[in-house]
Amino acid sequence: MKKSIGSISLAFVLLTILLSGCAAAPTLVQPPFTPSPIPPTFTPAPTATRTPVPPSPTPTEPPGPTPSGKFEFFNVALDQAGKDTVRVSFGYQLKQGLDLNRLLIMAQASSKGAICNSGRFTLFSKPYAVNEAVSGLVKGADTASISMTEPGKCSFKGFTLMVFRVQGSTPVTLYKQDFAIPFELEK
Image (cartoon, rainbow, N blue to C red):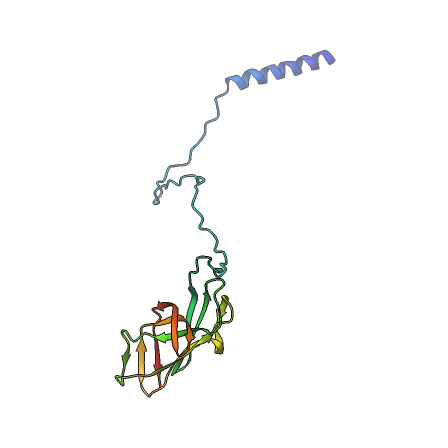
């Protein structure tokens, strides 16, 4: 009986193999095609590109003394202290080894292009007394200022900063620089 069961099993396996080879291949059914209203788009694959990166800003130090003796003003700005007064804040450098005795820095309003409703104006300029050859920012009450002394209203297109020394009763200008920073004064 064991032989007959083994023979039957073998016959069954052979029959299954023969029939599977003769069977039709399975048919794939594709879904019906429906056109899309959105046209296909082509998106290129991202590529590595080099874009220049701007240098990061670095804090700058005010210039140091110049051995050539070049005078310089930097970080110049105006502060409207009142309707009739402006203060001029600035940094500066002077010739190294320069005698600082009686050395002053003064701001003077530029009369070129000035417009005044009174036709005439009088200003007072308070100088700054130099106490070192190189300074950080000079600002506040100690700095140079320009004030209106007579009634009127004037518009100025700029001013001049000058370094000078008083010798006797005569001022001797060592350096001056113009700044086109407009301002108004009224008294």
